[in-house]
Image (tube, rainbow, N blue to C red):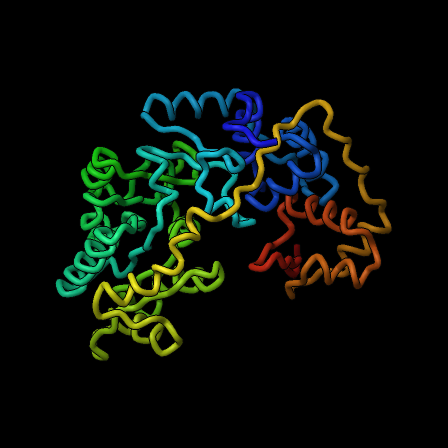
Length: 376
């Protein structure tokens, strides 16, 4: 069923579900698909985790917590976009690992415009900052929104250049935990200028080191291509470039001096096949054929759950569960591999993987592969 929004009851349950322990985007989608609605999935979490081998009862967010977070967002002038609703960005909704809910401040319509991610060194050179501003400004004037992660250096230069044409800043923490603090005025200018701030993290969440790669993935996923202006060989910008390859986005890189370590990463990207950029036309000409991708992506149809949702099949028996766990190991394998190897139904295998995931025993990898680390 297509609709503008979920019911308020379902929205609260979905927010509580994604805020619960060990529930990430892939697990969230599997739970809602299996149980028909978020409320039923919430109730099932403790039993599923226990069957997966959790040594303690996992923390399940309740509806009061979700209501409080929604009230906090409203006080700050923010709102939530739920995957499946019409305002959720289509280019994100097409990804299996897309966040089930986004917190947004500003104009969410910007998230559906063709976009270019601009990333690079925090400790950028003067020349690098100037290049980032020039390329971002000209890409903006050509109709592309500028997306970045609000960090110091190249991120900041890209956002500043895109203020007049539209820029989106992606947080690693909650919208009420801006980072770095010195960019608070820039964040205010983005919102006041018709731009957008977005995160998949809860309100009150202070960003940790492990949260920045997640932020980078959102930056990449919102864009048609990723422009790296300066980057050392070991940098988050190169992680973003790798993610771009995984998500089918273009990778652009500005070459630099071979004796400047801030150019070592971009030069390596060019050697590995990234598009060499010396002027904005290099980016714009490559992006033009992809413009329709932002507006032409099919959105998953919203299914408003109801009491008619069918009951899920019961848990796998002990022998099936034991066989599935024995077939797992530290080497990632896909669901299809497990089904073919074990001769079990996909539903039975998926359920045991879901139990292990909620118990904190499963690792998920790109391409839908999973593993069971040694000693877990």
